[in-house]
Amino acid sequence: MKKLLRSNQRGLMGLLGLIMALSLTGCGYNDIQAKDEGTKSSWAEVVNQYQRRADLIPNLVKTVQGYAQQEKDVLIAVTEARSRVGQVKVDPSNPESLKQFEAAQRDMGSALSRLLVVAEAYPQLKSDQNFRDLQTQLEGTENRITVARKRYIETISDYNVTVRSFPVNLTAMVFGYKDKPQFAVENEREISKAPSVDFNKK
Image 1 (spheres, rainbow, N blue to C red):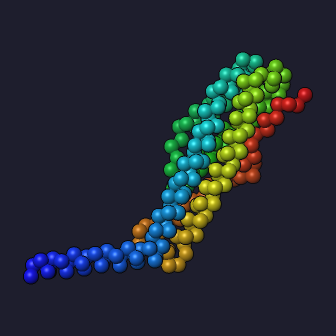
Image 2: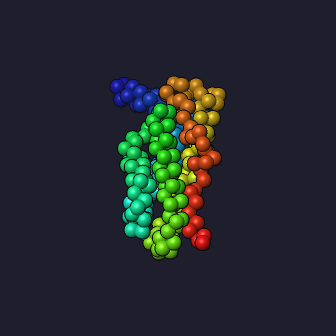
Image 3: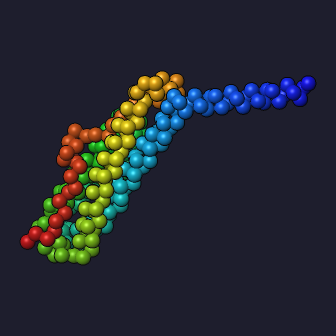
């Protein structure tokens, strides 16, 4: 009798587990999980590409310094901007933290643009192979940043639509899933442009 009772209990528990799993699937729980992971993955790619840009700075500064030591203020500004970027501990789920990250990256982009403008005045620097290689890497990285940002914005939009849509919004409320802040800056059009790195001008 006890064995039969235990067997029935196991069967009932299994049935309840199956019903629960099916109900979670039908109410969008799995969709929320998949889209949440998608936002994390695309954010990691944004950070990865910004880090790639930051990693180019020391060699870029060193190369420019070899030809234009007198441009000390510009070189210091780029180095300091890179340092500030490294100090920002970003939490993409926190709008304020995201704004700080955006501001630091914007400053980094502005400092880099100033450095590249200064480089125009030094023909020998423009013809240096190391500098030209760095220029190509920087241009490619800026393009990757733009693509990564676009993908992140799209995954966030997709996630936000999902957690707001009925009946998935009920599941989202129960499990505490909310809208995520979007990665956008005041001068989105300006920051999305790669700095001018054409050193073929005469």
